[in-house]
Length: 364
Ligand SMILES: O=c1[nH]cnc2c1ncn2[C@H]1C[C@H](O)[C@@H](CO)O1
Ligand SMILES: [Zn+2]
View 1 (cartoon, rainbow, N blue to C red):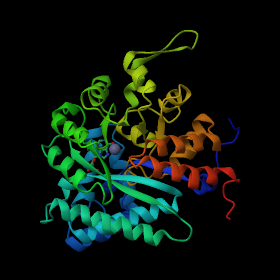
View 2: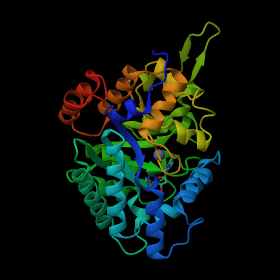
View 3: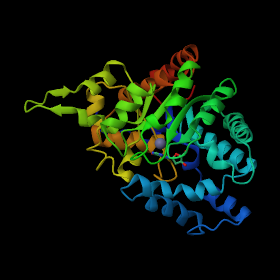
View 4: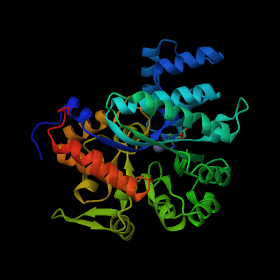
């Protein structure tokens, strides 16, 4: 491990992979303000700079439920096809500028029907934006982006959304997810949707082990068959450290590690929702040391005022991670992506490994 934390410019230029990022949690503050003005939606503050701060502070509540209230405003301004397309395009531009080479961006189509869009029209609008963003990124910034369709766990549309994900599987949608308040809404509530996806050979991840503990993770994996865990931080509750420093893994933690189940960890988001007390105390450090399949993610760039670069720099400061560690997280994430194997391999061998092989930052 290196002595000095990684420099932000070096991290930005290094290829990075993002598996857990919410479209409605990543708008530019100025875009929220402009879209709100267009439709007459009242925001808590008007000035974009203040608005960015408002989102971060309002999300800084220590509770997932209160954190989620901030989405009322972003979802409200994303009810028209043109708004969805714009937000999706800017999302890709921002990720590409941050050095992200592959991203899976999730959002919940059922929340974007208030002005008459159909589910299909909403997905098409986002896909259009992603394609425009990929084309616009240009300038040597190569990025591949896929949608993940989320169903809200307190609602009852998961089967419909799972069918939507399957219908769009060859047109830019790589998988399915459930999100929203975790306590009181166990993943088994949506078992029919997960069983359907399994029969369709489709991929899905489940937000689990963020605001609720091991039972949620256990259900997500052993009842629902999740390919990956959104956050999964509470898996730490199944690990004890002996007096001599040896880690003892309970059966669930052992299973998660044995099966290489990817953990989509998002450190800054976890601080805001109270899932971790500080970056230095974040379970990511121990789980990485124990060789779980850890990936680093942004979750909600607007609410956490974050980026892949900021997350990685903060981890480097807290745990001394160097570029080799950053490469390890990136390859972990690419291996865990919901892209076909040969496409994952092409990105690992053609983009990620070469990006870390020469001193990062040298342009060729
Ligand atoms: O970290 C999260 N946990 C659970 N739900 C979340 C999180 N971040 C965003 N969401 C919700 C709010 C969004 O409106 C929805 C779809 O992106 O997903
Ligand atoms: Zn999330």
